[in-house]
Amino acid sequence: MIKRIKTIKNFGIFKDFTWHESIDEFKKYNLIYGWNYSGKTTIARILRSFEVKSLPSGFEDSEFVLVDENGKEISHNNLSFHNYHFRVFNIDFIKENLYWDIQEANPFCFWGKRHRFRKTIEEFK
Image (cartoon, rainbow, N blue to C red; front, side, top):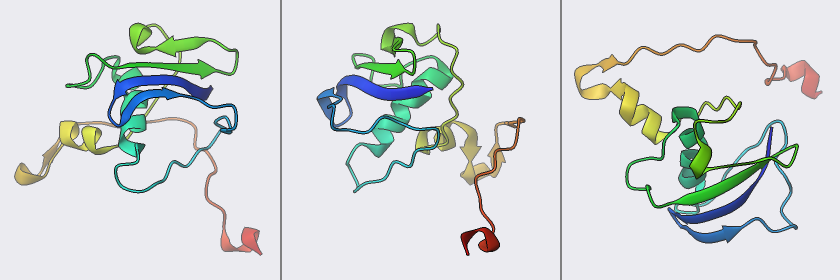
């Protein structure tokens, strides 16, 4: 599991980001939210780089390092050599797979263990 983003350099709004010790580490489930142009899409693009095993177009000179629960670092230099399974459904995914003007889509399907994420109304009472 990824615990934190150690550094981000020259990637979107992040020119020279270093994870500060006051920032909580990632947990099993994480929600990233913020104002427009605050870096949400940039973080999604970093994670998607590991999914597609390459940097997005226009970000070839960008750098980043993520740290897992064992302290192992994975970076822009070793996108093909990791055991993590990222799935990011952001604007880049939509542009690459859904063609609204001709009403078509690239085939994609994800099978796997269902995770219980939603609670019923009764569980909130």
